[in-house]
Length: 538
Image (tube, rainbow, N blue to C red; front, top):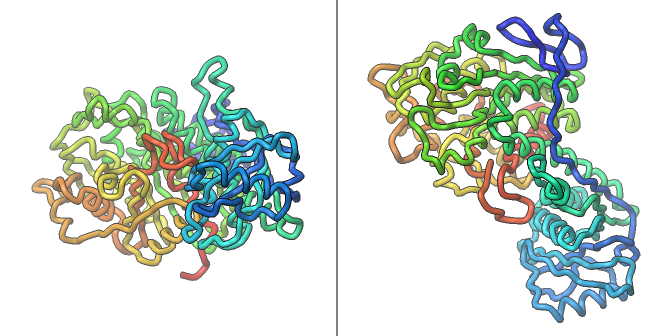
């Protein structure tokens, strides 16, 4: 559905129902989002698979293919494995040629690491590494043998099949829309893959693959949005995309412009946007399940389409990847779109605070005082601590909406990256039960997350001499003081969790095969898993 020209306060429409402004909608053309390759579960035996490449598995030190039934193919593969210096570490692959003696043209043996450390992430890495190796030898279609038994976490083919499919789908992601000529289309020769299982295991495998496809589709959307340059994905454009995607996914969508933010009293949000020529937008999406919802959950995402640091200007190098600062909002949008497939019995509200942080002539200055929609005032000492200002106003707004729990995501602090490195999100929460459920969901989804403290003693760092609170603390413990700042605006009455995804949202190197350099879609799989698993009574 197109974005609508509407009164200054907001543009509201229940997707697919007409509604909202009476004026005719203007067309919105969505960008060419990255295509998801085909992955299916099929009944079949590895030795008879007519495919460009058959993927088998091996444990470190075992010197033989794991889980492959006895027969001539196993004898052939085991003999070649023993003749090669193949250690079968995680992410390591061995390419073998069958010489025309078997149906598969090639064999790719994917390492699983040590048997005693075998888990779902070993299968994700194997699925991705094998896909990349197959693409390197121009294979168009590949087949994965059934994974070996013995996964420590998430036993059963539904989970292990899902992990292999996730590895393949995430590992083959690459945004190619800005390449030209052959580079635009030659990212990979691969077009499809299948998981070969027995007839009795087929239903479980298909369910696992279905869930992997849902997760990967949403993850790819988030990665595309984060990877999109700031010049083409402004706050206004993101609002148009959200409106159109909401229409497709059956979501309600409300968009507030500057005047709408003023009427809500969001002085902190508006303060951040002052230095930019690009107008801000607050996007509110709603998913309503069929029947009575079990709970009411709010997801809030920081959406800085570009962060220069404002007058507290970043270095030139520090700005190179600052299109990433919209990762929190991108994750919220991708999660909301994915809910139509996951179908949780939960009412979910997604909020995206979209703006730029630029050093224009009207930009806020260090020492300025901003008033939030809840009435609290903030002394701004560092204009590069801007994401928390946007989130503060949205948290104030959401606080009075009767939510059972609130979760925000933001690429908020470099301090969290220093503490946990580039692969793990920091989890801060006022509610242990909420934190434990999120940690369990992250573990199931294969994303790294670590619980962090909210030390009350550090709150003194946020005391201001002229306002209720200041927006930065001392040098040390910056991720904690940022979380304590946010807590000032949501309080302790509503269960709340803050996910600092500054590390895993955008990475500079590939730590393993299914996490490509650039945007990762951090948090999408965790949130979809969390909402799908949310019980009615807590």
